[in-house]
Amino acid sequence: MCGVIGVMGHPRAVYLSYLGLRRLQPRGQESAGIVATDGESLVQKRGMGHVKDVFTDAEITNWPAHAAIGHNRYSTAGDSTIDEAQPFMQQTKFGKVAICHNGHLPHTAEQARQLLASGHGLVSTSDTAVVLGLLSQSEKDNVVDAFIDALSQVEGAYTMLLLTRDKLVAARDPYGFRPLALGKLDEGWVVASETAAFQLFEGKYEREVLPGEVLILTRDQAPQSLYPFPTTQPAECLFEHVYFARPDSKVFGSPVSSERLRMGRRLAQEHPVSADVVVGIPDSGMGAAFGFHEESKIPLRLGLTRDHHMGRTFIDPNYEIRGLKVKYKLSPVPDLLDGQRVVLVDDSIVRGNTIMEIIEMVRKAGAREVHVRSSSPPVISPCYQGIDTKSKDELIAAHLTIEEIGREIGADSLGYLSREGLLWAVGDPEGKRHCTSCFTGVYPIRVEGGTSKNQHEMVST
Ligand code: 5GP
Ligand code: MG
Image (tube, rainbow, N blue to C red; front, side, top):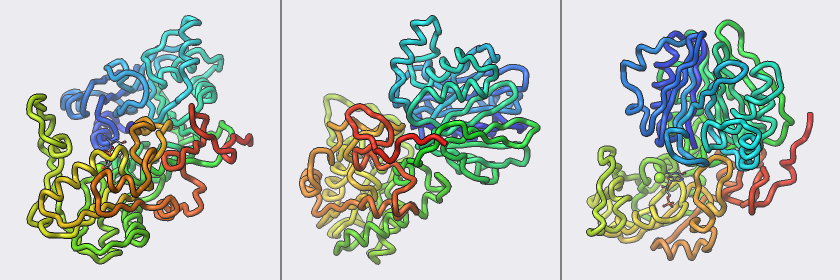
């Protein structure tokens, strides 16, 4: 998963991109970068780690540019070195271009081999570099057509931004797996993975960039939209609503916090329980915990606190403290838990390690019963569309029944929100707009070892 932002036609394009990237930091913490243009040349700065550590104040304020693109990386493909930090920049026959990408292209290995065999260099090992390679060797006579040409040759999830001296082009794959919102600035335009990125500097939310849309932004002209790809049934990512997006964002046009409230309410309807307190697991389980509390009328308590200051801590290999990684982050409040029948609400259970440690922690703090509720259905299959879910072997729900999982993690009871319930909560009760592959193992696109969905076959328009 990654975060992207692009600003066009604003004299503080770099500063706004930087602020936006900081807001999008939860989407990727491996590396960050910005490429910006003053209309003459493109300038790039990338680094490993957090946005605040990659850029100095002086760089951000003294970088003249009216357009910029920025990226936070959370790798799904390729290595994790500075070479993979985006945006990538390359000299092409169209001049210098830069691109950045949120998503995953699972079938680019062969194309990478062919590009290299035919003498084209690639800027990195990642799937995104292949798009830049295909663009550079396209026979089209302008950069927008070459970008479209390159994207037509790849399959998978992409929300991609392209920057040239005078254009910012935003593209979303026809399934629309990953989000992209368009905002209007006091001067110019902004596109970003989530609206919270530009809420900070009062960008006005206009609309989503649509699945299959290629949006061209320039300094002087109105935005122009092209729809060059065959259309298909959209498959927006449900996990963005459940876990990934910030609670202060709209994602795919929907307000995340309200959706999480609905998930929690529905969860309480589907899996009611007699208990004394509801405790949300910070931060991502809190939205659903509020909903569970409202529906069940069971008091909500901050029974777990999240430590924002621990940072990285040295783990002494000779002195083992069980669940130390979870304990760095979360600390129980014994006063609120002692003697109580507790409902723990989290957004998801992936490998099951986190919840297992938390249950133990809550019991040690004196809880009498611990009931677990997850606001997503069981995760049974890996994601090939841009979320770094683990391999099937590591997914606890891929191998055990719900009763077995409950026993394994040490819960007195366990309940997952149903797929129908989740789709209802995100306003898509018939499942017409969302990808459910991590909950079903049925994929909209071709994947190794997975099933493809016939109804998702490409239809030409
Ligand atoms: P697990 O069951 O694998 O130990 O972890 C589940 C926890 O990880 C949940 O609290 C959930 O909020 C969080 N989580 C879910 N998906 C992701 C992800 O893609 N990346 C990270 N870093 N955490 C995730
Ligand atoms: Mg969590």
